Image (cartoon, rainbow, N blue to C red; front, side, top):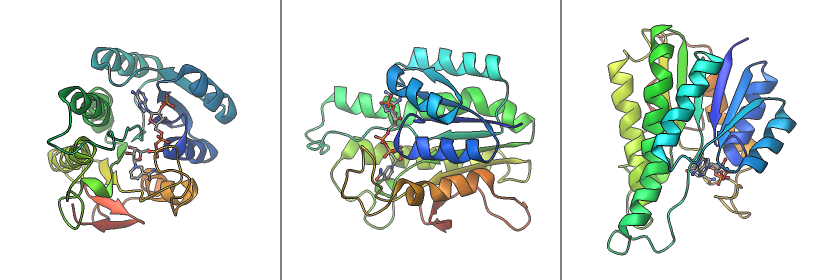
Length: 233
Ligand SMILES: NC(=O)c1ccc[n+]([C@@H]2O[C@H](COP(=O)([O-])OP(=O)(O)OC[C@H]3O[C@@H](n4cnc5c(N)ncnc54)[C@H](OP(=O)(O)O)[C@@H]3O)[C@@H](O)[C@H]2O)c1
């Protein structure tokens, strides 16, 4: 049975992704901050869990090392955790504390998870990393065109991390896939009750990327995806 690790697995898009991977027969470990919510999500999925505050980067490093030591090399790593920045966080209004909080959770902990878990996945030539980014982090279209600065810039950083790592690992030719996903506006705690997409719709592309068959001569990896299509960064 293959192992999938899903951050943000306690609720929203991460929970839906973990649910689908569990239903596909993967053994799943979910990671989030709130212990009670995590325990109840893990009980309903029938999976393992680890609690950590991903803003605390030392604890984050220790937790992913422990996960690797305990569960072994995953075949699938889905990073679906994230926080929105405060409403008033335009660049000139953002406090250094708010900047640091959003960067730590959205970008730094993403690097740490990849840096600890992905080397053995790449070495095994059997691994896929899927990271929930956001269209607000795109450098094209309206992506980075103002407001919510720490959030948008953290997601632009996530996109750059994915593109860089894909180049470093041979764009799928060595059995290691890495992709970013823009789920679009989805009804979760972050997206709010009036968002147009259900969690099933919002999580569809990440679940598909986690489980699709892949032929390096015909299929693409190392991109930003929306509705199962590659879109401009
Ligand atoms: N929903 C949308 O419309 C939308 C659109 C574009 C992109 N996205 C992206 O998609 C991803 C999932 O979003 P969502 O809507 O499912 O969000 P959500 O419902 O707010 O869930 C956020 C998840 O991240 C975890 N998390 C937040 N802060 C954490 C911390 N400090 N330490 C550990 N875990 C933490 C939460 O764990 P706890 O339960 O422990 O707090 C929860 O599992 C995010 O990266 C988001 O930026 C969402």
